[in-house]
Image 1 (spheres, helix red, strand yellow):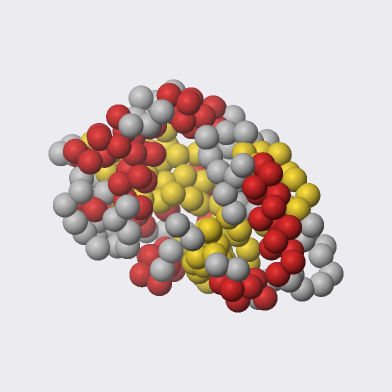
Image 2 (image 1 turned 45 degrees about the vertical axis):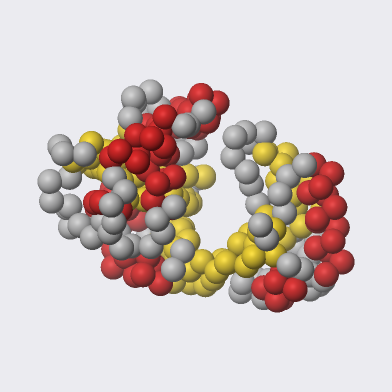
Length: 251
């Protein structure tokens, strides 16, 4: 509901009507391999619509795209694709950490987005110095339009966010799930580098799974940026089923 689906030949281009950008994806039901000419058509549609050339696909469905996208000059990034029954996702509680699902009007909801900005800029699972101060700086830079968009999605139940808090630093981790009927995708699980290696991400993911189960979800999906991150999810009950790729125009 937040994007217009544009026919781009072998792809469907999703043109956002929100502050988020969306990926193009291979069109469903295409009965032939994707070719270079198809990427050229997609690139032209992206230029016409004024959006970036960003593609997402499952490697096991479209194995030809990895080489094609690289030869086309795109930056290609693999992601482990994992799945779980939410009833089977469990983790030990994180010590001295409170984890809660937040409502759309919760004053701390924007802190989750700020933590994601800080955490994804300090990728991986290693600890580090960035913490509450960097979170607050990132939060101050969030646009009113983005905050309103986050609250609207939460109010409509399109995005369910959990926050992890400590007495010392306030909100230190975040994550969300996006339910559609009986399936939900877990997204944007992020921990401030200063709070990593404490089991917070695992406990937060388990809390999201519990909430999803209560909403009638029977299948959870997620992608992990590398093997270290994937192993965190495997320890709480997810299993790998494939590889998802992202491709972006080189910068």
